[in-house]
Length: 331
Image (cartoon, rainbow, N blue to C red; front, top):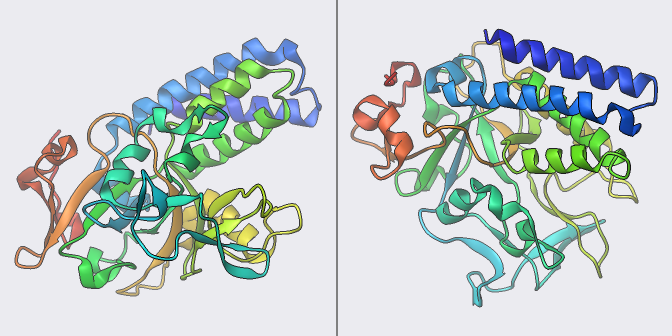
């Protein structure tokens, strides 16, 4: 238990709730004290993140997993290239596969690495770099700690498991995700009166891996335009329930809430196989232990760490056995 993290998490949460209840969170007079609690929570959160371990994260139900192509893979035009004929498409309202020739999403190993660099999530001449570089959120799975084998929990690209990169990335504790969601929402509302807090939260958003949606079943996530045809606002996630203002409703709103309490989707019935679908915003991770980039080796029955990655040096023998609890870590 990290007492300092728990203390400042609780203190900041309480402070935000009091300000919200009194309807004074937009008052500039509160900015200095609030910044202190924000900075202390963030400092201790990042320190905790840097100390995290693979087996601990799996046992606590916090380990995510994703497969991706080992080289460039994208939809739409990027740097003068079109990888897949037909261009980029997204759902808009009730219409599936609407074409957006000037947009893109990148899904290869190179783009996952770029998502770890905070400098790729700012603005460039009025355009969001996330859109310009195609670094949208992506799908993944949440590992169930009561299931022994990782391969019984792989949702995507099973046929390519030995040729695609498998990425292990631990998630923040649910309490920290809830706190950040509350802080982010309030910072947006108080942007005009507390710009320093708003800008601080924007910088934190570039550096915090977050779960956006979660469910214990496949919800067929994809690209959705919640803007207009002329000015698209693209998001990756469930492609169903949004109202006329682009706000989540119905099952998709529930999936958003489940992501903030993601351990609630983990099965407890003793099953041997399960696939929880999640949507992840990959971002910077403190230290060099994560994310872990691996490739499945059938003969070894293990996920072998890519040798040139700094995170690989944290795993003894550079292998994560399919029976994940047998993983041995340095330090």
